[in-house]
Image (cartoon, rainbow, N blue to C red; front, side, top):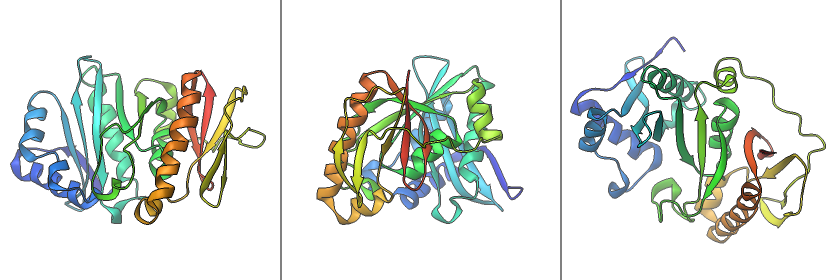
Length: 260
C-alpha cells in the first residue's frame, strides 16, 4: 500500500471532492449528500474528514463527528471508489481514524451499517473487530441510490479502539472462526429466508444473510422486503436476549452471534 497516503482534508476544493465521492460511491440524490459547507463546519468543531490518495488521486474518505460524550465519535461515512475496493484503502482509512481519535482522547467509535450487506459486515466485524448488539429498524427512512428499495434498517457497530481484539484484527488478522456444529438461527434456501428459529439457547449461533443483497434490492423488491422483515425479527430477537454479533463468515454469509 505504498501508493496510498491518508491525511486530513482542508479547504473547500477538497471538501467538494468528498461530495463528489458520495455521488460516485452511493449514487445518492442531491438531498442525501452531506454538503461541502457542513463538512467544513463539522471539521471546525472537532470532526474528522480525511481522504485516501492513490498516486495523488483521492479515491476514498472517512467522515466522523463529535458526540455529547467527548470519548466517543460517530463515524458517519466511509466511502471508497469501486475500482479501489479490496485494495486495503478502506482499512488504511480506519487505521488513520483510530490513530486520530486516540490522539484526541477518543476511545470508542460507532457507526451504522446495513445488516444484509455481507461485504460491509465482513469488513466491520471480521477485519476491524467491531461488534454489534443494536438493531435499528428503518433508521434513516427512505433512501436513494444503491440503498433504495427497502426500509433502511441498520446495525450499530461499536469499535473499542483500545481493545486487544481491535488491534489484532487490523494489524494481525486471525483465521476465520470454526463454524462446524454451530446452530443456525434461520433457514435460507436459494437466497430466500424461509424460517427463523427463535428458541435456541446455545452460547454461539449463526445467522445467514444473502450472498448479493445489492442484486436483490435492484431486482426483487418483494424479496428485499421479506429479508428486511426476517432479519429484523431474528436479529432483533437474539439481541434482546443478550446476544451480540462478534464475527462474520463468507460464502455463505453468516454472522457469528455470541451470548453476552
